[in-house]
Length: 331
Ligand SMILES: [Zn+2]
Image (cartoon, rainbow, N blue to C red):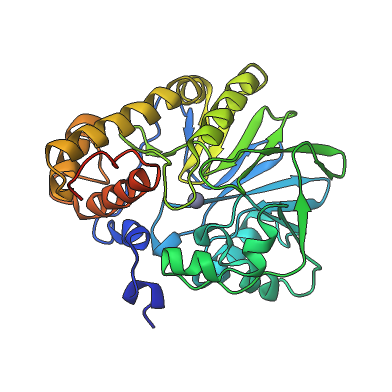
């Protein structure tokens, strides 16, 4: 059956179906500093492609394992949960003991109930920011924001800034990484010099395709900038960043993200505001964005721009909420 969300497709959702006909072929670049293939990528961590909307390379789940205890970061969508469980088995990391949700957006939390059912012989703890607990228990507001139905998630263990999750001796530190949402957290793994950030920093699908994070209705710029500063202050202790969308960026690529992301945020924001004032049509702004920021993208090409238009429309809404477009009479 076609997923309900395809029918009720919100702007966000169509973003994920744009590649229906263009199977992504990522290249490993810069001596494997960008890791997008599944499997183990450091002493304790595995990347799993959640096949969001059946698409490869769109939403990464991570599993951290130490001495037989495993924690998954994010859950993907219920429709793919069975496939995710098969991948866990294939990788020898079944079952999972904890699921940590980086924030309460539907694409990260939808699969929790199904995953728990599929691993019913194991008591799975679900953890998230203390600010996410109410959103997870009562998802109706977020469901209407995104046009996607997520079931309530109960009994979530609340996490606050500075909390430590101890996986049999592997200590993982929780950091508030607010901005993208006001319930976003990062998981810092000092031992492996890696940080999991969900959507809190940016989306970078490959070296040619990147998208900022000012997503309505919850984006908070001041908090987002604080988060970027926080990440920058951790740079010296880290060697990789694990993005939900998508993959692990190491070495030079990691440092590039940390050092460029603030400029990228302001540059994209300023450009979209400027183009909006020239001509508020979404197709005009989209073609400008494509030309300036991602001209060589294999995901959004000139012939396959529809998905990008939906994202741009979404950013325009975000900028209106931020008050950035309020001086313009056009809307
Ligand atoms: Zn998100």
